[in-house]
Image (spheres, rainbow, N blue to C red):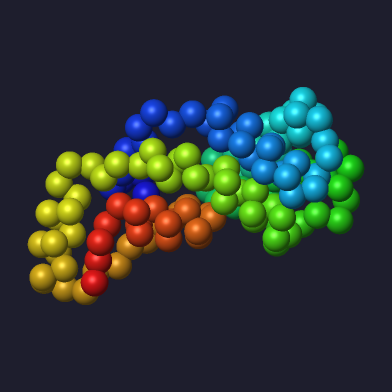
Length: 139
């Protein structure tokens, strides 16, 4: 997504706090300090995987690992409560996206010449889906 959009006035720290609040609303009782420490540890672990192994790891894995680190041993990345909280986490990110200049014109020109598709390495598919629906009207 980064090649066709820019983030405007986005705050990762605000999104982390919204993620924490969403997890609490989903029934995960943990202090903000403990959760953020575990989340940041998991985030750094998978950041090293991303850059060291050139392999993307979805945010659901980081969040599940953080929750396991604070005592929720049965939580995995497919947990519906984790996914619900991630949807809250990404809302501000999605709302901050703005198409870069010329993208719509490029899409229009290319679509008249051939079938067009979009590849993304974003690992949480709902973000791609909701971002595109918000930014681009397509037929």
